[in-house]
Image (cartoon, rainbow, N blue to C red; front, side):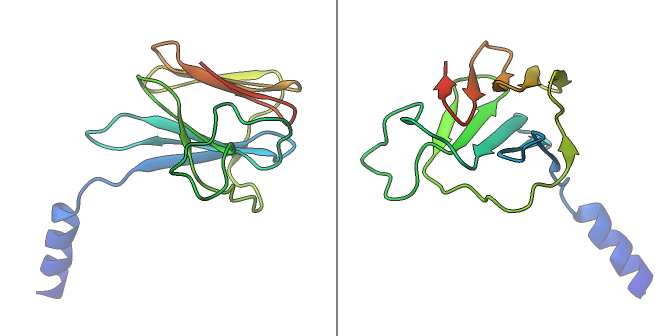
Length: 136
């Protein structure tokens, strides 16, 4: 009976998100690419240490850290979170300088010594480096 119950629980469980962490060789830019059943895939990147002004002005509703966390879905504009970077030990694959990766959902991300760029199928994207961050 216990085995049958365990089997029913597994069958009834919803599909879990498939999330893949990766980071630049310096570890200063840490990202995850995620896919989940029934929702758009996304890329979330944070820049741990940055200089200069943020890519967008800090909204009045943000009482926390600003300018470190960027979200990009399969379509639509870049979103920025009012959140401090995790900044812990990077995990997952290393996106080596000079490498470009195409992800499901139409994402293309490129890691270079000058910075990290991700673009979605609509052409929206972001560029992150310690010296500057841009969104379009």
